[in-house]
Image (cartoon, rainbow, N blue to C red; front, side, top):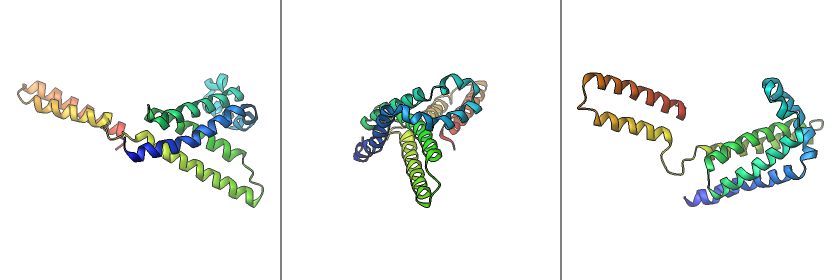
Length: 182
């Protein structure tokens, strides 16, 4: 792990640890703030009504998820999965903060905008952490190189086998492109 990762991951994680602990401590107070966001989720996914109906429990789960994922990101274990979990929780937090912030006064609007930009910056940071392979090749790269190696080794095969190999190569490249997003 490079020095930048050793320093940056705990720095990103620290904000989420404190935010998660605060959410766990004040789950009852944050439940009313979660209600409008969870109502929107229920409209989109009606089958989630059983879960979204208990705002306090959702607040506790979000807080615990933030603390656990932030600790994993901070120590560098399962950091990509942890960063994805933090992306989800940070997005929910950004929505809740934005909807519940005071927008009646000029100062309130400014504070609301500042908080939104801070949350978006944190989301961007954990998204970068989610795609960071820590210097090791990702699954898409490995799959593509496996296909190229198999293609090189198959030069002595018959015509039908080469056709099947070309089809497999196309499928692997398409899947790799879908995973990478290019």
